[in-house]
Length: 301
Image 1: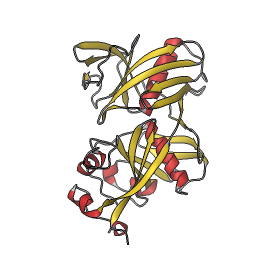
Image 2: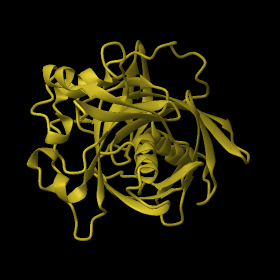
Image 3: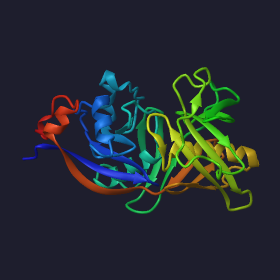
């Protein structure tokens, strides 16, 4: 009989996650445990944790702060940043989440709906190939028209929007002069009371195929190889800058690969990109308990 907690490891354009299958919501995921799991030297390692839990069970747990509408999708993506904080949405994560559902037989290939803290997301996922996600409409209400972002001694103007988590997009002529490792950006709490992901982007080609490149510093995770919601935010800003009509894709280069971003005629943002599950394993029960995992469910004893 298993004495550990099963997990899978997956990534989308290098944005990597620890995936925990917990259909009935039995696992106690404390911030301490999340930080330990995501530690790249002393834990499994990852930019965040994706818990696969039934929406009804998640909605019944007050600590998860989930409101499920009538007819909500069966599966809820409980996303946690590597610092243990709760995330509203994760664009690369939802593709990995969908791949996990299909590979484990929890959802049929093709169109599916997934519940997130940012609302219901419609996903198209087959057993292989890229996965497309309708990420919803960008949010401008509650954000300043323009924000200031400090990076070292430099101060940049940024477009502020939500996808639905908050983003500050700085559009530059080139990324060549940026530090090799991005320092933590200085963000005005008046502009972003809950913090923000900061994207530094440049347009590579304004002729079709439209292309751009970005780097990202994620709140709760630091600089990562990719950020799906950040790519969507950059796609919105680039589309507006170039006055692109709906349906024109932007090939967005991130450190971990390439994503395709396009605005739909309905005003939402569609993201298409890869997702890969690469390993399965078990976290030892004694390690789990020692790092704030709480009481183990019967299946993890």
